[in-house]
Amino acid sequence: MLYTSPALETLIERLSRLPTIGRKTAQRLALYLLKQPREDVVALAEAIGTLQQRVHTCSICANITEEDPCPICRDPRRDHSVICVVEEPNDVLVIERTNEFKGLYHVLGGSLSPLEGVGPEELKVRELLDRLRQDGPGTDGRERPEVREIILAMDPNVEGEATTLYLAKLLSPLVDRVSRIARGIPIGSDLEYADEATLARALEGRTAV
Amino acid sequence: MLAHSLHLQNFRNHSDTSVSGLAPKINVFVGQNGAGKTSILEALSLATLTKSFTTHSDSVLIKKEEQSLSVDARFQTDLGVPHNVKIEITLGPPIRKSIFANSERIRSAADLVGIAPVVILTPDEKVITGGGPSERRRFLNMVLSQASRAYLEDELEYRRALKQRNAILSRQQGRSLSYIQPLIAPWTELVRKHGARIMRRRASFTEEFRPRLLAWYSKLSQSREEPSLQYLPMGLESVATDYEALLASEASKCETDEIRRGTTLFGPHRDELLLFVNPTQEARLYASQGQHKTLLVAMKLAEFEYLRDAASETPILLLDDVFSELDDDRAHQLLDLAASEELGQTFITSTERSRFEKKLDFSSGDHAFFEVSSGTVAPILRGA
Image (cartoon, each protein chain N blue to C red):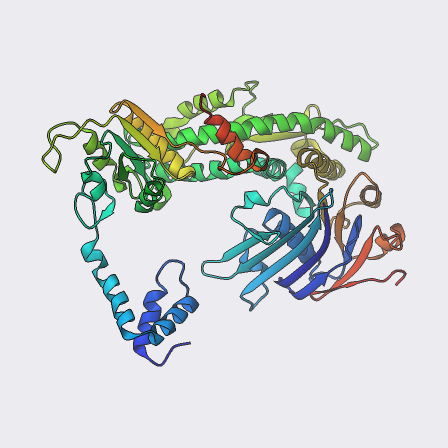
């Protein structure tokens, strides 16, 4: 059904282009916005409007940032000899929340998927290789400490696995150590409730104690 | 596993059909062609395998002019634990399928398949003994993915990796080996890794299945055929058991050919499972019509037994319109077996009523009789 207001109709149409939003949800959101105080709606519109102006990707790690280089890359207290490679900016947030990792990141922007036309050229692989080359000072003018370890933290699916294998082969000659995050039994769960496949992977990736 | 009740909404020609009072042994659904008998079995297939056995397309299951369907199936495990499955399919685009087991949303088919194992026999299944290699690979996948979750996960990941690898080979067709090699290398490794695991399981399955097949065949047939089966990894008569090494050597052999043809030429998607009616006679080439039928039924019964042991749960047997295909002797034999303690709960569809009325005692409570007509199901009362 089309609404009588073209403005409302335009908003519904725009909203329904967003991921996970169907036409019905778009209608509900549009009608909700219509009833909200004007200043709230303007604030939302402004937030959306300035988003792409203010947010950029870091020229070093390709994470999203408002300043370039990003605060993580500029932080002298972080360990600049370790880089954790992830697929998406979201993954940085998740790992940061653990408070366990003090190194730097590199955001690839996805994983290898030839079916969707994504090869190494479409990901920030060349940028990663550039970071590992040790010629001259970094963009901030200071000498960059040598990168010793790369941690690969891809999603645990076929594409993530292929990306891990690809990068491991490419990067091993350039750094002391290439590692990948462990996969296995979630904390707080029971071994007997783990499914065979997860358990098989956990066994495969067992570590010495 | 026992199915207690089924509820179908907008499923094929069923607008709103409840089937309760399912019996622990044989449940017969009679009705004319197009009445909606097979849909009952399809709904059970959906609730156990997450898909129909007649079609790959979920959208055709939705009743004409409706937007969504739902199937509610209530089961009970051998140990008496309730297992309830609800499946909803909504027309898109994109088409959406939601699966719930005991009210909890299930993310992957692998979380459901195998919990309630099923064995399906329909006239279409005769391609298993008479058709090409892909039909027997489908049979292997059907059994093994219900028997082992790890197998199903390997199979799903294998298929995905294969598709990705093929995408490179077909898009870069004709490029030089040195250009393509680093691009396909990670996918080759994944195809090899998952492929080797699939092959290992297929090989050991063949060994475990052979004596069961022979035993069931001898039970069904008075003649002295000695059926057997042989697993040929990638069609090779290989005695190697190191499948990782076998895949690696095949992979390097076909590399240039793959680039020319633009597709992956090694891996378990090229496996063959040979089926013999006698030690030197391949069923596909030498079996008579009757031998094909006996062999197929023996395969299904051996599948039942294998799944029961592997999944530690009695499978449900779905027999869709098979009695019209069998001669009287074989039909009676199968019905006797289904009624015996050797098999579990069985669902049968048929257009003819008298065979079952004569043969089965519906007053005992072991069996139930339903009439299906234009999308409705009604129990047929005792003696009616």
